[in-house]
Image 1: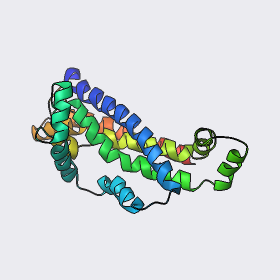
Image 2 (image 1 turned 135 degrees about the vertical axis):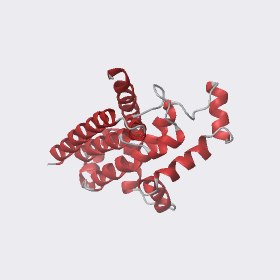
Image 3 (image 1 turned 135 degrees about the horizontal axis):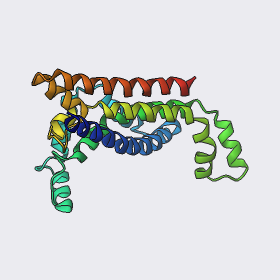
Image 4 (image 1 turned 60 degrees about the horizontal axis):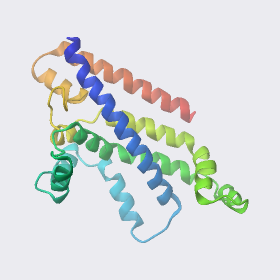
Length: 218
C-alpha cells in the first residue's frame, strides 16, 4: 500500500515546489510592475493575469493543449529542442499549476506593494539608492507579509490542481499522477481506503498552509 501511496504525494510536492518558485518570481515582478505603473493596455494585461482564477479548469486545460500541443508552433518547438512533447509529462503538470496559481501570487503581492507609502521609496532614491536597491531593500521588506502569504497560497493551489492537470498532463501512475488525480482514480475504482489516505494528506497540508498564512498576516 505504501508503494502506491507515496508516488503521487512525492510528485505533487515536487510540482508544487517548482511551480511555486516560478510563480513567486514572475508573480512578484509582475505585481511590482503593475502596482504603480500606468500604461495603455494595463487593464487588459491585469485581466489576463487574473483570468485563470475564474476560468473552469477544463477551459484552462483546453487552452494549454492548444498552446503546447504537438500541432502548435510552441509544442513543435519544445519537441524539437527536448526531443519529446511536453504533454503527458510532469512538466505539463508544472505548467498547469503555474497557470492556475499565478493569480493568487500576483494579487497578494500587488496588494502588498500598493499599501507601501511611495514617500518611503522616494526617500531611498534621494539617498542614492538605485531602483534595484529600492526594490530589494525597501519595497520587498515592507511588502514581505503579502508576498509570503501569496507564495504559500500559490503552493497550496498548485498542490491541489486537478482539472487542467488531468487534461494536459494526464494520469500516468508514477509519471504524472498527482494526489488529486490519484483520489479521483481511487474513488472511481472503489478503493476508498487509499482515497481517504490521500484526502487526509491534502487536508493536513492545506490546513497547515492556511494556518501559516493567518499567522503571517496577523
